[in-house]
Image (cartoon, rainbow, N blue to C red; front, top):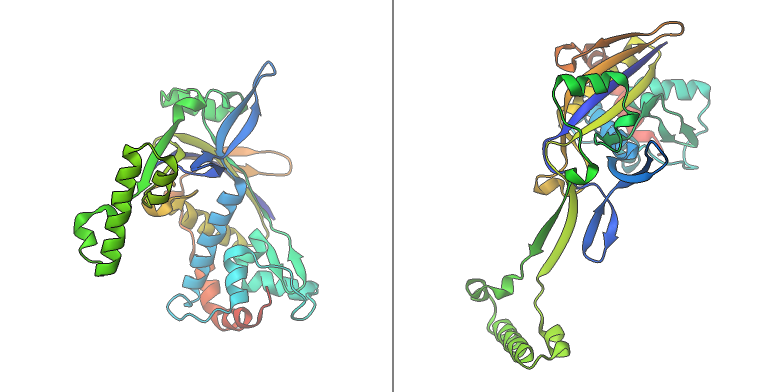
Length: 326
């Protein structure tokens, strides 16, 4: 058995809109309380461990299906889809999962054995621990490992307050009915109705009639949202316990696939949420001694064992995904 741990510096390649909720029409960034030296407290933006773990699970699921030849030949049940991409759920359907069945599930679906999930009547514990990605700023620098402080100094990276990294965006969904050219596409009765409404709004505005203005207002929808600005750095770590060569290779495939296109938070369809690794440090965890070295994922040859396993077990994988209750 091995313990594999990686610590990363991730850079925002696009603004990060990872929100914890809304106030009116404004969404607020996900923040956590951090105790500062001396006893004061600050709230610092971060990316939840759930978000990072889910990204890892999705990347592993796509890699698994692709290696088994099931991407171009869709044949998943709803349960299989839920198991691979969301971890499944406990159900009374299907037979009781005994120890031998559990071993078979983990063998047939290596990502499930690593990340855990629910299949049939059993909650399967995972072997991978995914940390939160914490914004690198003056409020968090006392929490950094020494190697990260040294790296920031070597790269001449300044560490500023979390407030410097946060900005607010304003966007508006426009009402197409306000465009004269687009109104020409309407049915005559619809065009007449809109023109009457626009006229009523003008009259209400001139008379300072708040109730009339509200009744005649357009469907324009302004909204605000906070972002962590492009270029900001995050510290993130992940650790996995692997018990075989297959599990080790699967872990590396999932990690590499996730970080090759790492997108988190909301507004992904509008150019937000992209993260890329700019530095990685691998820690070899051993029972007695620890050895630390800089590791580059780009130079590691990974995936051969994983893909060979999926090709060999393609028939069993298809049968498993067709019958699993999750």
